[in-house]
Length: 387
Image 1 (cartoon, one colour):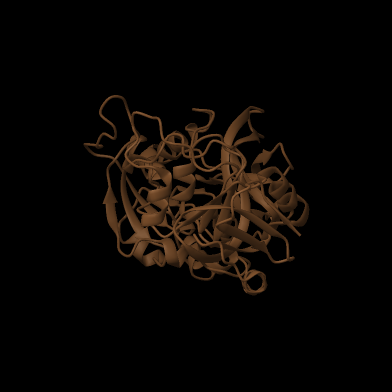
Image 2 (cartoon, helix red, strand yellow):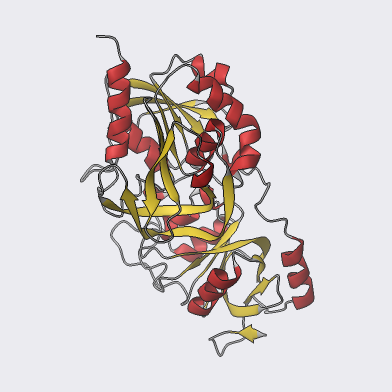
């Protein structure tokens, strides 16, 4: 079966592995890509979403219809280029109208080899994802509107999926580097951190730039290491704390090499803070397990309860795997839970400065609900320093 809203000849096609076909109007790059399909409910931040390394291997359906209205600019990239495989939107991208705009969305995607598709019934597509789980898809853009539907469905069915897939190795940095840029501030943009700070090693499994900015703003002198870093590599920097970043793919697959590194760091009683994939791999290193979710959590309006304080934070999330709270070992407690489905959103090791959260405190939809986590990490390092 097929669906579409435009009366023009479609120039883009989305084929699901079950044979369902969605037609629309293409923008951005031409060609074909295969990926897992997810949906994101955020009303803003499409550029940050497309450049978030955690979306590697995924095509993103945007439930908010006004995509493209603020254009794109260099300051809002979370990494150098878009990482998400493609984007699906209800309406064709609107013309940009924002004082920070440097480029329109369509040409920006085209230059970076990412396919977009508009004119889609995104509500129907979102319901399909919720009911059936995140499907495997093939997304094609051909200005002439010529599509081999059988071949596209076959490509979607041949996609391996994200289970068992280590994608951190594809999005991590090639070599270590220093980071000193802090959070954006009016009117000068991103200031530079100066002076002595806590020495933090951030292990990059697909780190977002704004996470690194939050660490710098919290007083951290940040050194970023590739995902393949060993415990010896990390400890050679004599860090005051270690940060485990977000990232894409199956945490168990990345954990093959990352878990031994994390366990080596934990043995030194150094403060450790993890976000998203870093949260999941910390849990694995402590003896817990992770599971693949039906359609994951992707959005900027997710309520999370802090079990310690009873407060509710409005958070940004982007994950298709979750920590199975029932497998948490003795001495590791659940600190945060999703109020949508009760899934785990945070852990802490009893008596040690080791904690992590599933959501993204740097994205700040609250807007300041979760920044305390960076301050908690800094406080843990301060307490560890000799008098």
